[in-house]
Length: 351
Image 1 (cartoon, rainbow, N blue to C red):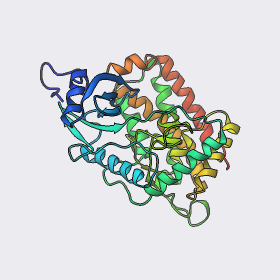
Image 2 (image 1 turned 90 degrees about the horizontal axis):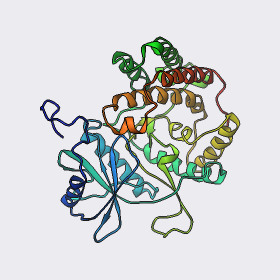
Image 3 (image 1 turned 180 degrees about the vertical axis):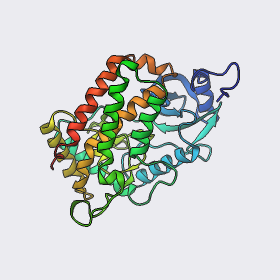
């Protein structure tokens, strides 16, 4: 990575990542591509499917400089290795040159097997139950020991720090800044009142014991769950497989369960019921965590806006998110935060 202090420094982190550098990086770990490169959907990092001269296709991930430390990336890789050792269908990096993380041309990168799949049919309760079973198995491994280097999903980093950064860097247009500042603060205040986020414990009853945190996938939206049809080769295995542990953090189990949910309250209740039915075949689910779904959704909303704003110098972002940053966008955020405040004061989903 070039120093930003030099006169000819790149204007964004990946400017120097040319197709030739990608191929040379692959060759540096003993893999030789035949020249075919396909950029896969990834905004935070740069990810390519590469065809080899004498083997199956692989996926190379080039990590955004200065996002995670090397220790944090290696901890993610170690978590993936634990999951694969437990025969959980997670796609983890290969060990090349003695390490899962290698360096070339100023970039840290990893190489993984290429695994195809289609989006899961999340309206099918059998599919959701199947996903729930594997999430329980991921969490059973995740609960075995804590992360040492990777952070937690918490109110401070996702909510307070994101809000402070957006306002401190004048990312919210003046005509909507006051309304967004109020709505985001009111939402954060509601979240902060929940015992999970304060660490408070009651003397008895509902809040008598803390909700347990564990190592999570962290970003278990439907795009990170690929479904393999029943007629694929046995080595891949039918059913779901999970990709992209880049956002793995510590947090409550429900963080990995709420993100596949969609639709109205009745639809989400049915979907969650199927997920939990599968989950509890392998691991007990603490139903107190259901009260965290809307606070976690609200934190993701604030964090997502800050993520987009922080990455705006990367030309990939204006191209793919042209609607971001306008007054209309921020007015929409105010409306969503107000809706989330209502949702956080409703009764949690029941399964």
